[in-house]
Image 1: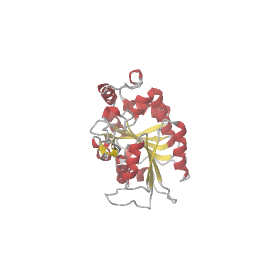
Image 2: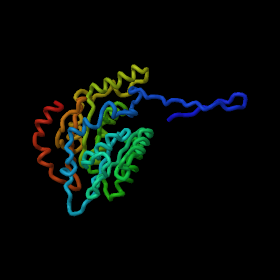
Image 3: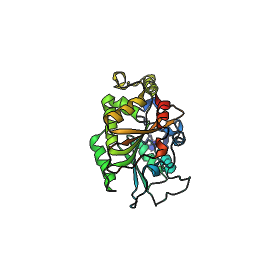
Image 4: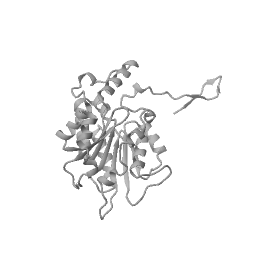
Amino acid sequence: MAAFVTQTVGGVEEAAVEEKPRVLEPGAAPFGNFPHYSRFHSPEQRLRLLPPELLSQLFPQGPETKPILGLDVGCNSGDLSVALYKHFLSLRDGETSDTSREFRLLCCDIDPVLVERAEKECPFPEALTFITLDFMNQRSRKVLLNSFLSQFGRSVFDIGFCMSITMWIHLNHGDRGLWEFLAHLSSLCRYLLVEPQPWKCYRAAARRLRKLGLHDFDHFHSLAIRGDMANQIVQILTQDHGMELVCCFGNTSWERSLLLFRAKQTTETHSIPESLIEGKERNRSRSWR
């Protein structure tokens, strides 16, 4: 935010001078907390790959209508969060949600400035909740997420969104941190939509830091999990964390896969929609192998 600076000369205050806000260089956002992320990775690129009826397919209405609970980790300033909400409820600009089936989305980010902006600009404050949270802080995570879930008498989220956040967890917390991050998500969500960054993005992020003369990521050179990151994350979630890959929705124009996983053991299990199963193997081989 702009600050006003006053100077006193001879006991008289000079006129206030507005100080321009410092623009954060892309490489100076070591947690991925870019101030205008959606300007260079628009929500539309993801939405065009995701069927609008996805949530109704995954969570068909029963005799007792319960809200669908979502968790968006690394929400930035909320542009994608709002876009996902509108997309899955098929809302146009200016329309309100259909109260016959609620979709409640808890969105978290490590950057309080971005969260504040998201709260101010959100057109659906009754449905989207934004909180500042370092997801890797176990104590804060447990308190804040449980507080939200308890409002609905639930212990897990129906679906989690992890959109271009895995690299930042990996670079800042190492191989173990990435493994633990995916473990936490898989234990918290019945379904999980993941958009992993490819390895070339790791190199680009490290290069930007060096170009700005900043300290390199602590774990970059020691990472053993590297190479085909989409496949690495598939292996961790399916082999170590009890999830199964439902389908790959394809790749964005910046070559990132959208992967949908389901927990093998959940308190309420619905069959996977046939429309998602069809072509599963074809999409899998085309998109990340």
